[in-house]
Length: 364
Image (cartoon, rainbow, N blue to C red):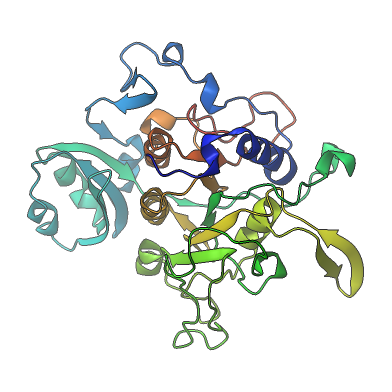
């Protein structure tokens, strides 16, 4: 991609995410980064091959092992990928099925089907993969006392992140938070470039309208599978507004404005700053009160790639089998489009091999 911003120069952004991983998401050791990924990390018979700077996925049908345990369920969400030519009416014709999300980059759909129809999907021609659509959970945001981080180690450059467009794929954000206030500096992209999905008072009267600014430049809601299978409660927001807190916490920790006054229960806590306070943010809400469906997250990742972001931050679940994990494969697409992906390492440890995320083309 030719129109990337300051990410091309690299160092500031790499430092930003490196600090973020250490400070915010986990006390685990960093074990993989994009620059470490090479052909030797791909085993013989792998579905992937390095072609210059990119990693290509070879065509091979993948049937998720977890599907076998879902055949007796009344309604199951699955993610189906295919190669062209493919007749989508074959999926639409499956009894009692519903296509929920459609993916243009990966060529696929998510759909809800009766469990006893899963096998019929796997047998269609030109299908390349059928994956179980997991309800995942956000990684805990509790601070780890063993981290022993000093003030000197967390000193923030107030200009860090300038020119960087940051995608927060999480539980949404609370847009009125002062860490998302208008930046004083001129910034790109222009306000109004992206949707700003707040203010669905028809569903939740407390969902106040909000006009995005040159800090929080956009906000999307990707909850279609969640709403179809779980439904929203009356107190949840059917918008990009955060009703959990996780997304606001992680996003402000990463890219919140510099020197924002903070107080807890009326007690002055001084000021707080994100690691890259000059970065701009697009929020992608993919989680409801009981979790986050991979199919909704997949739609958000695809949109973030289309939006030409520089960084994707994702602190939901994890994968120890990235070569067969649909979210990890979407991040491979992001990697091949020069997007830096930071994925949470989880909160287990400090024993060895306790990372919840081991995808070689992301940083954790």
